[in-house]
Length: 445
Image (cartoon, rainbow, N blue to C red; front, top):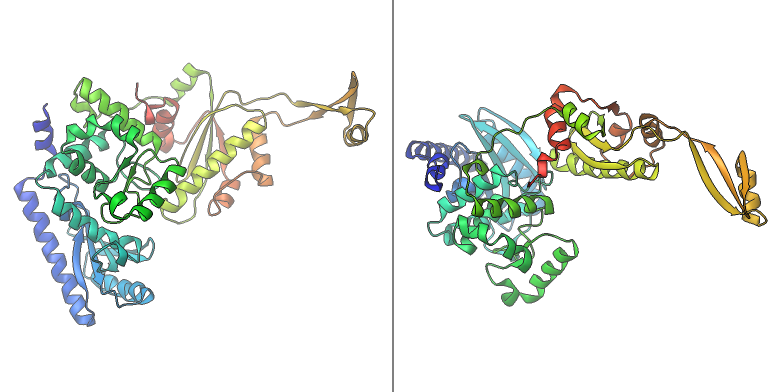
């Protein structure tokens, strides 16, 4: 299969395009009816890949923004915006209220997912008041600059999906669609973006609209902040010098792109676009490696993944640190909305701790003598022996009970009551366990 054939399989056909346009026109009509009834001055604007014509066949999530005038206070934007979005939602097949910086409505219309988002009708970055306002500017910038490279963007998006590096959500930390569009516009084509993988990492800063010269003070502040936070690359937003488009991109996801780009350029393969499912038996991996898997399962609070998963990540790292301090070697961690995996070298440790003490003829030596039950002399110093929990489950339960670990505030209570399982996982987590233990999640060789 050639790149031309890959494109044929991912590019929307004329019939699909017509249907998408018809649905968007119908949604615009519904929204405008509701707006007219409300008496508000609101423009309906479509943003995202459908509006930019960079979407992949079958990927039809619709982002419909309700653009309020700048004269409206933020609190009114939130309350009135949600009220109007809900009124539109009631005319769809179904809807629910979701929450980001401010509430919006997520609905379904003729099988299409529709996000109805209140925002300000901004003309440039200086007018941006809420995080979503930029989406209008992003769409306008891409439409102005893409110049027929839409299909090159489609190839890059499909490639990033295939190598598991697509999606900028905080629980994925990959390339966003907008970042893919900027890279193609900047470097010219899908293949040229791949060729620049090493260059991007070394140059670090990509500035498509030359903000470093036009707004040097603001742009340098952005660059300095992102360098201090050790981001793989810094792509100064073409519509806002205060923002790094690649702020959520992790080193791991960029690393997948870095190695897979090299692999494709050396030996092109359509399997990178359409990978086979990586399936295997986690128990066989455990037997081969001789390590152990500790699994914590819990019931998370009813909050969106963008909030929950970063907190679970922090908790997993906190538990790993505590186990290391307790003498267990942790070889790796993984996590999801309702589970934590810890791969460890051993699940048993000695049931006693030997502690070296101070000089026996000092004040500290006498305190050490008083505090410990079994004490002996080694040269001029004291030593003690203390019983300890040996089995990792007992140690973990003790850590959880005492709360002696760093954790996300919304998930700590849930994780304190977690079920702890050794060398076995519920059926629903079997594939996740395999991908984790085999290192397939971020494997590049």
